[in-house]
Length: 338
Image (cartoon, rainbow, N blue to C red; front, side, top):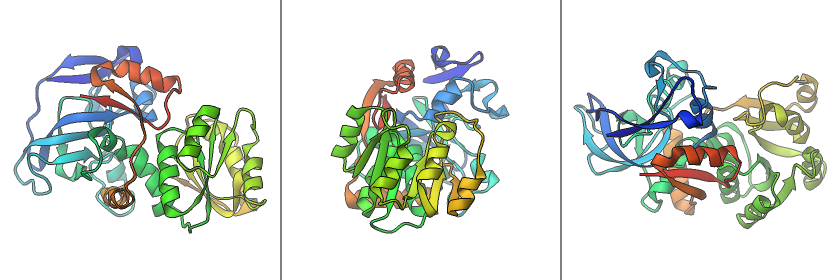
């Protein structure tokens, strides 16, 4: 069978399709024939050698945490799924429910566990979940990381009510899922982007306010104007160094900032005085548990929320897909199809 792999000296141009031995499911494991994968910024960091790697990778990385496939076989002791079931991978293979613990967070696909970028893959039965029938394979593949991150930020960690204002940075996967989930929950939404065309698409999805941060670099002021000077109840912070100060100025007194990414950089002086002054809450967020994932899927089925799949590439053309991500060409998610 074939798999995607990358090794030192790393880089998108070093990602290769290689022949490897087909795996066999052991006790408590399932064998899944992959149908689709989706890209996350984490995958780009991993392929580029900018993501920590553990001994389990042995110097070679099989990337991708997010995929959809069909269970082909099961090992002894498997009870959660059966051959023929369509499943999603779960970002964390060992986080079923409850709060995050070290042992949960050390079970992520791609690192330290080989990822879903292969024709056949074995996973723990605890690390897959059956998915709604109304979603396509491509749509299912977008759920494990981006969708669950947005879900947890809005509904598990924050305490929001209908009518509250949420700010979503950019138009990548997490922010677009955040927009869709927030609209279903009755929240007022503000979304930022450097592209007027992407902002028009966000408006069509139901965004209440849009801000071009290139033409309006002080977008926190625009958020405060949209909220009558009060500020946002919630900010989905994806930028890191490039955006955190604006987020601190945009959030209301007692508001919540979910820190989920560093796409604009990771180093900047942090002034805690602003945080103290508005009594806001900063919370780091790394995806979520299987229980959160399954609750999210129920809500998506109830509201018929369909992920935004912007671009689809053959899985063997993963390099081109990563280049599209690097160029910021996408709105929503980029998918690889088998």
